[in-house]
Image 1 (cartoon, rainbow, N blue to C red):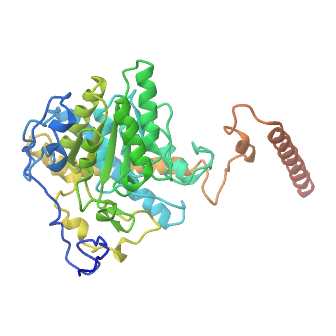
Image 2: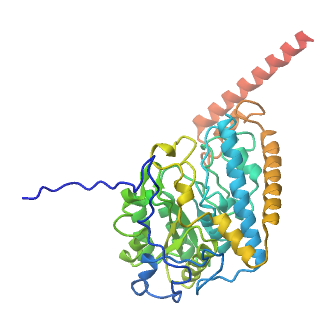
Image 3: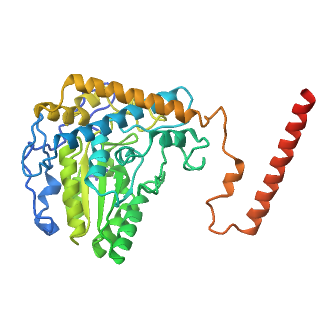
Length: 424
């Protein structure tokens, strides 16, 4: 009698071993077909088993998914991606110097956020995860505002109530980032359902990592999106690692994450997440489908988290140090740069000048941000602000507490003024 054994998914390589990505199925660029935007999910299941790719290894754009963007549009996209990386690198250094308490880089994943932000309309509502800062950059949010949130200073958009990188931007239609994994998925579906009820031509988009797809919120969102055909794009960013857990633990060994879509009656599309053109094209296709009342789309972005999960993480403890260099889909910035060079619309010299310009811009933004206060130096937030933005109508007990604090502040200010007068 054969004894049953529990299967434990293991990553293909551990620290000290040779990186191994043989488990990835990567078809040639330009091979995937582009179906009609209203094609039934059961007729396009191959989009979830293959991979939409446009850019080949020579920087050439191939196949029916090529969005045929202009050189200027490509240069704008490249700038956003480089700026996102320069911003990340500066904030990582500031955390290491003790200037901010926490940070999470998006290195290697810039194409996902930037391409999708540019493919959607400004009126579309975004429900981000914590590695999609490119959404804010591409929609024009000031880096100073993002830095101030990480500093929890007097210009902090969250008034010191959220941990660093939990940004929001109501005017830019970007919902607050949540530290509770996957909550943004059902929120995005609910927002999309409301837009449809109101007869609006807007859609919602949301992002989670592949690890968070194991959360119940993922399935709740998929069910409601399918049943009510909500105009929503649900993105699973498969960057291979959920903190220290390999993507197989979330089910990636059995099927692609995109293949979960057809089980709900939702098209699932697997895309090369480091190919800016492919991500842009697939997002435009999904957006056109949603606006044409075709319902939701599940997109799996196959990419790689090049940096640590966060500044609290040491990836050298669970994966080979050189694994990022071995990633077969390359660097999204380098690939878009190579495409522009192949078109004769860019050069290494122009790239170097762009890098230098944006590094200077980030430096100037940081200088302004710290002028509004740091973790250790003033100015500081007014403690009275803790009572704001909590209730639509402040309850009596909080009104009393606010008044008590105001009187205490006045007494302290009077005492300080008297002490200064005696010193004079």
